[in-house]
Length: 211
Image (cartoon, rainbow, N blue to C red):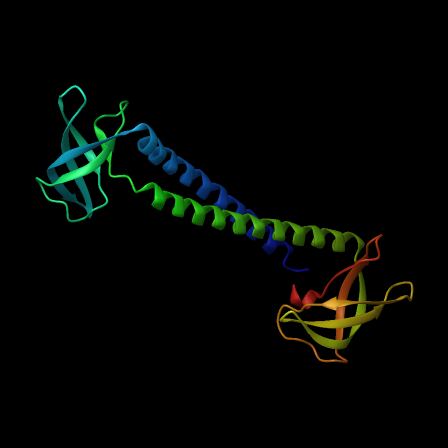
């Protein structure tokens, strides 16, 4: 149970990273969604290309609904745009001097799916760490020490495990399955474990050398 602090730290860091990532993506997506669904597509002409500190700044001009020529800064995806080129951009009424070449809705959907899957498996990892911490807490309060013997080694659906048996503090024979973090023990090997018995009879245990 020596990795309790490490598990807690990993859980907190992972949760913070997932939260910050979600906030950043939501902010960026809000801007793109606002432009895609609330903006107007226009054809703009590139007026200038300014390469400064490896970041290219584009200035374009377009004709608005009133027939007026508007000059705006542009965020473009293409790197080979030249002065005089025409580009399709999106503009919104509240900020006519900033235009974007927005990715297609299909690309946004693919990104959103990938992001949601990443967040799902990330929070799944957080839940797993929380369950592990709960297990640490239970064992630290109720855990008792015992020496278990490996009685069989088996392969269940491609996962290698070992049947172990031991006597609890009251002299009752107990048996359970051990899935080691590294090497599979051999039949007859002895394992020092920390365990407690739930009211349902389920055995919760750890092998300290694996933790």
